[in-house]
Length: 317
Ligand code: ADP
Ligand code: MG
Image (tube, rainbow, N blue to C red):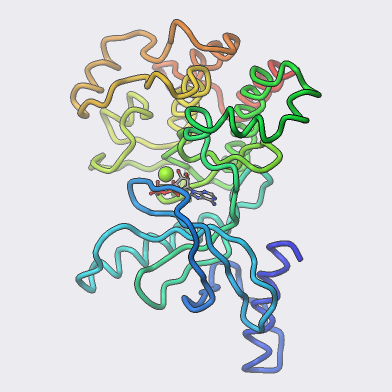
């Protein structure tokens, strides 16, 4: 059975056990038991979570499925922290359950009944784009050598295909009124057929516009001028981050668009440069057109994601 089916089986089993009736529960209301998860190796680590490979055995004894389990980083010492982590995972799950797209990672549900609180999601075996571009891309492509041989120009086309997949995911987010707020190569995962799925909805919100006061945990190097100065987030600020992500694709994440600096320095740098993310090198060169367009300083001069998708699609053809 595919993952959705397994998930529905879970719902049916849980409810038929207690009521003998089948009651549909919304996907974002499902809570999984800690005992249903078996941990495997570490897949990755971000600012908030540590992600493990794992096996999830649905209630009712169906076969275990391979999953990725995100465990919140931090010592749960107080009730407050428990609330914070629960709320964070719950919001990540509720955002994910709004989304349903081949280029977006799906969630099985949260494990929030015990510590550590966790989020169970589909396993995307190729790892994130950043790791793959810098470290394992060669191994990965040699693993898919047949595919490579059939498509000799794969590197450039493949890079544009990654950009296209991400733009499609972002169009879907736009139709569902979700702002991602952490769009970067590290949050794009590679499937076994070498396509991209967007992940990490830990900072995402279901809003068209939001203003924050504090950017302390924000990915400052991917943020637009209006975010850095006024804390504004909306589709156009995601479009800016998409432009920065294209520079990551072009440089295979080798050269960070900006060396890590503090908020003040990044603000100054963005202010003083007309095209802060216009890079000299990088391939495929055509993508620079997308970078320039997405990283226009004035938000109204930037395209929406539908326009981005069409432009990238043209580059792909
Ligand atoms: P954080 O919110 O801490 O940034 P992420 O959700 O981005 O956490 O996960 C951290 C890393 O774990 C990712 O960059 C990726 O390498 C890996 N990872 C996350 N989700 C999955 C998944 N579903 N399948 C495979 N690897 C994953
Ligand atoms: Mg992340």
